[in-house]
Picture 1: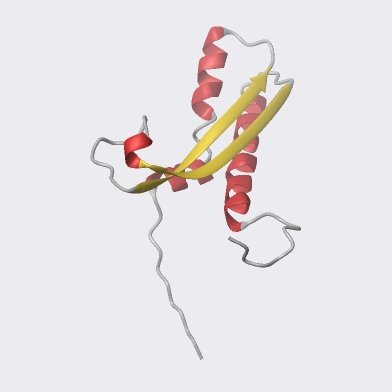
Picture 2: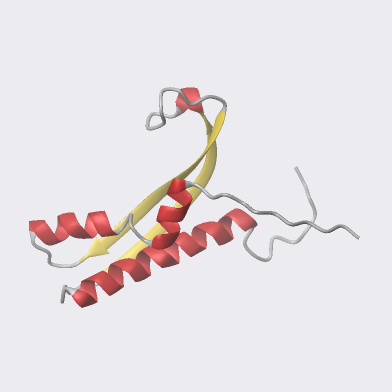
Length: 114
């Protein structure tokens, strides 16, 4: 559906994904610095889509209709011990923006139309 515009910039969902991607990379980087773990490279990609609950292999069994899903691809390169690798994988999903989105948000809207 053509909604106008020139596609010169990101759409709102791409902006949201950009914030969680940046937060993830920063969180991993800060953790590694604190623990004196050398990271050679971090690559983070997030993808948004709506999927039908019947087609969602990782959704709750009681989910119905279409579900907003975010898929991440996070690559952390370096020479890590098994323990460091496991911990970095845990840290990758614990950035504040990721946790907020995962838990859900309550809006307190005050709209004035004049």
